[in-house]
Amino acid sequence: MTDAIDPLFPAHLQHVQALADRALEREGYDGLVVYSGRPGLHFLDDHGPAFKANPHFLHWAPLQEAPDCFVRYLPGRRPQLVFHQPADYWHKPPAVPTAAWTREFDLTVIREPAAARGLLDAGNRRLACIGELPAEFAEWGFSATNPAGLLSYLHYHRAAKTPYELACMRQASRLGAVGHVAAEKAYRAGASEFEVHQAYCSAVGLREQELPYGNIIAFGEGAAVLHYTTLGRRRDVPRPTFLIDAGAQFRGYASDITRTHIADAAGTDPTFLELMAAMEMLQLELCAAVRPGFDYRQIHLLAHRLIAGALVQEGVVSGCTAKQAAENGVSSVFFPHGIGHLLGIQVHDVAGLAADDSGRTEIPRPTGHRYLRLTRRLEPGMVVTIEPGLYFIDLLLDEAQKSGLGRYIAWDVVRRLKPYGGIRIEDDVACSASGTPENLTRDAFAQIV
Ligand code: GLY
Ligand code: MN
Ligand code: MN
Image (cartoon, rainbow, N blue to C red):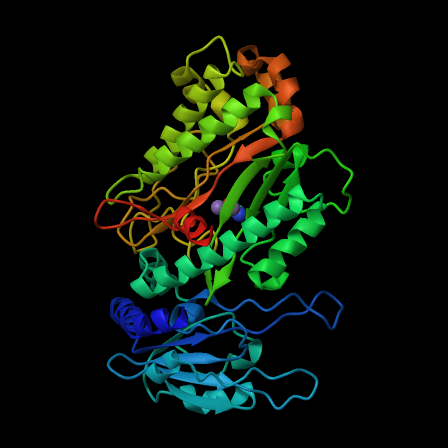
């Protein structure tokens, strides 16, 4: 796999450099320093959360576990990688990278962060620095730290992936698919939510801290909690459904995958089975809409119309048409989140609402849809998730009852279906110049069975 991805890195780095060239010129800087970051500590403790590298740093170099490292870039010159390998006998210092991608950098190893100062110095040039800088770097002479205009430019353009990034995301998808298959097997063998989670991590070969987000693994009513990360330890709990939202990471790039399974069709309420089938069909229809130039907000609104259609068709909603249910707020009682988001180095990748690369204007969400994370038109290379959901959430059902929307809800059907919790199906889909979307998730599942 690495053999196929490595040759794509030089062109990726050239693209990253070209973005930096344009951003620096527009914002009036002569060069860029990107700092990887430093692990923090918990309050009053000498231990801290797992280290997470600055995403800008990962855009340049696939070094997820390397604190106090720097990339320095002056337009027209080879980028420089200052790699911190401390002299430390308490922890194992990170190994100096030797992979093929390192050939694109001038690499210098330092033993302590302060040694970077002289290496980063660029005389009278105006250097912009991106990163969460410790106070001790304050006097290092950067002209600006995290200037908004520079960040806005880089964030906006990071949405469209290079072939290298797409290759990394395909691999992250394959890892995720392997984990999902192992997790389903564990569920069917009677494992607890926690044990399913362990089966997932083992199959993917990642520690929890290496996952792109905390696994959501829910049986039955837990599936109605959008971000259910409790991981119950008991096996002897109701488990008519199994919702798993779990991804993986490869070279800093994420996958974000959700599947919903039923324990057995024969023992499942026929209405719930119909809803499962309807969600599968409509999810595929939504994935097909990931085309260049398409307004992502329209995919979100289409999802509401289709989910409303399924709710009316199956008698969960009555007394109004599907179109009315999508407009009067009823569909939002059952589908209360956005249809998806940009995906990349960050799971909810940046600049989803940006109107352009200036950072000055946002594209508004459709009225009443405050959780939608992406409002841009789709461009070739963008990777987005398509994750329609349908849930039975007490809090929202109670609110609907109070607001008057309850008259459209068939409460007897809802009571019957509540033990199933809900349904979410989530794929990662790349927008392609050809017009035919690439479904990274479905391709990954197809490759491993
Ligand atoms: N796993 C978080 C999300 O689907 O957005
Ligand atoms: Mn997602
Ligand atoms: Mn997800």
